[in-house]
Amino acid sequence: MARDRRQKATDVFAEARLWLGEKTNDFDRAFPHIADVRIEITQDGEGVRGWNRHEVLGKRSAGEYYNCANPLCYNGGFCLGEILRFMEEQRQTERELDLRCQGYEGTPKGRKKYGPCFNRFHVKIQVAYKAESN
Image 1 (cartoon, rainbow, N blue to C red):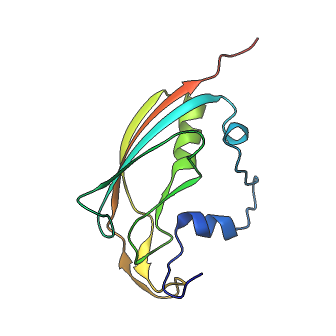
Image 2: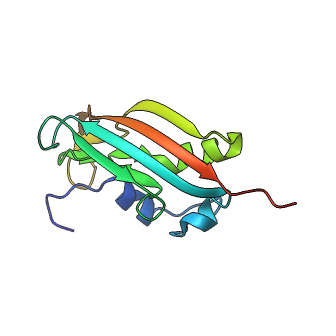
Image 3: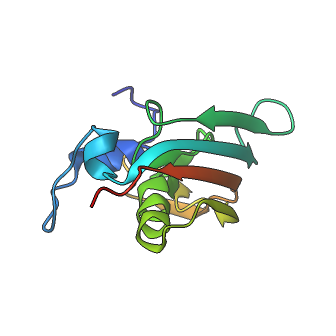
């Protein structure tokens, strides 16, 4: 990793050792009841080119975490997988929420904290579920 590059949430998760459960890159394995998903994320704050950054994700591009664009932020982003697991458990088809970045501005390896990251995310999720088989 480059000397001045801060790890984002996906980097920290990739290095983490889980004590409960297991990691997978297979969306269908992680969310067995979801047939399709559309996730719209608008991020604003430091490091975002222009006023905000808009991105649309689907099953193939969604991951456990969504990263913050702030170049000074360590462990930045939010846990998208947690939101999808809650929606799947509750059988919700739509959800809209505003989130703050979970990271903080600090040194590249995260040893010194300068303060919280103030980037924000507006998230709209639409989920289609698989038909239940009897």
